[in-house]
Length: 248
Image 1 (cartoon, helix red, strand yellow):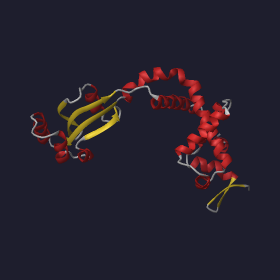
Image 2 (cartoon, helix red, strand yellow):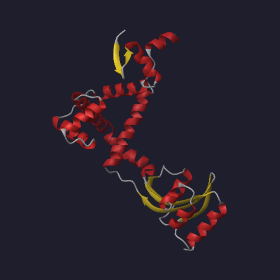
Image 3 (spheres, one colour):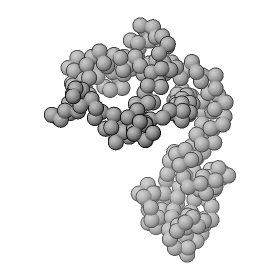
Image 4 (tube, one colour):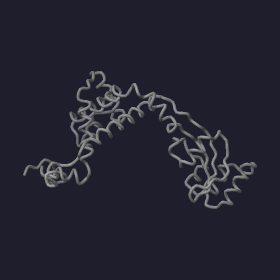
């Protein structure tokens, strides 16, 4: 029986590879990579694009010398040629995303903007309704600042930051909190609200409207690609041939 892989001295026979991939649920990932390879097969890249991609990769990985490159390759168990192939594949994938969905980014941004907007807000949470009400009036009357009372009374991790949270996207907080923040004006303090077991004091500090800048554009392209990939995966059956024969 042919051995095709050795890991820590353990020989993996060819016949055991597919069962192991299935056991560790790696067949779906393999299927995804095959789908991607088929999609990008016809994408062409110029030498200048490849060189720029390599520079970007080295900068991202903080590789600035041949010694660091060799150490990185050894750590990743890769050869220099395999790394070049990986960088080229990633470049082709980015070009595939751009070629396929560039004309849909703006409409996707409009549809997604509500979840991309960010907020900075202050939060106090306590299990005691009476304490929540008292703190609300003390803040309203200016007897103490929100930050001071959050540090003293809030029962969550936000106490360490004086109640301050963010900036976070609007889909991060509890849905009821997100709804209140969306309808708030900066500086607006809400009366105590019961959410689950917590009495909540909430104040919007800052609302940051999402902009279609380059990082956001890159993220939206990735979203559209992942949606496409999920649709492709829905048409794939990740079952080994031997298993099909056994079950037939």
